[in-house]
Length: 224
Ligand SMILES: NC(=O)c1ccc[n+]([C@@H]2O[C@H](COP(=O)([O-])OP(=O)(O)OC[C@H]3O[C@@H](n4cnc5c(N)ncnc54)[C@H](O)[C@@H]3O)[C@@H](O)[C@H]2O)c1
Image (cartoon, rainbow, N blue to C red; front, side, top):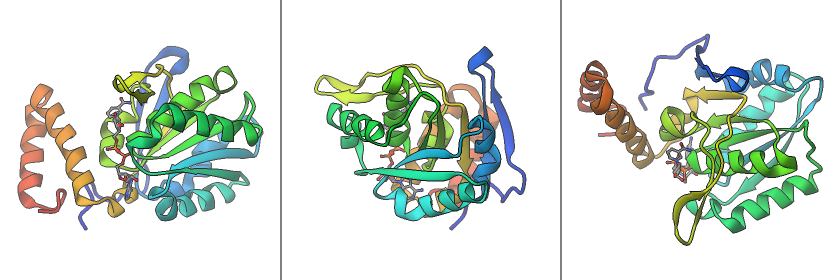
């Protein structure tokens, strides 16, 4: 299966300049296996993190993340929520926050959001309200989450009145976008992310639109 970019030994590093809430975005291959390199410095001497993922992503990618953190002496406790938009709900956030409190998170605990936009939005919201705010890292595993939802600090859940109507603006400390995660992404989800890229290109980047058109026609990225 074609990956959207060539393998990168060293990640590309972008920076979101937001004063004291500024954070880096690392994009590349094999980042989960090396996650401890970038996460350990955020732990201020602590050795435990809590990783939250969904029932599809966990079996596929959590073991690589756990291995990458263990190699740096970091212990991982994990919480798995049902895959899908249903977890981004009042029930979903209550269940997650209760579980985090059972795990005795405190103000110094770092949360890791391993999954697509649903996990990013849900965990970001949980991070912003648990203990009045704990740090979190976005580890986006869908193309949509890598190019859009993991960046910008919008968190939240859906309610009866509509999607994303309750939430917070809360920035992650770091975004780790591991391109290897995209290898397991269903074609439909790949297309969904590609559509977001094309939308961005149409609005503001003619050269990139031409690139996306060429790649789409070539077929690899969208499974045609
Ligand atoms: N916060 C923001 O700025 C922002 C922006 C855009 C969208 N969103 C939100 O993002 C959500 C949509 O995100 P999404 O499209 O990533 O959906 P998603 O998180 O539901 O993921 C889509 C499906 O792909 C599965 N999956 C994820 N990664 C996988 C992988 N690597 N391999 C195999 N399966 C994988 C998931 O389990 C799920 O079944 C919506 O709730 C939307 O409101 C937020």
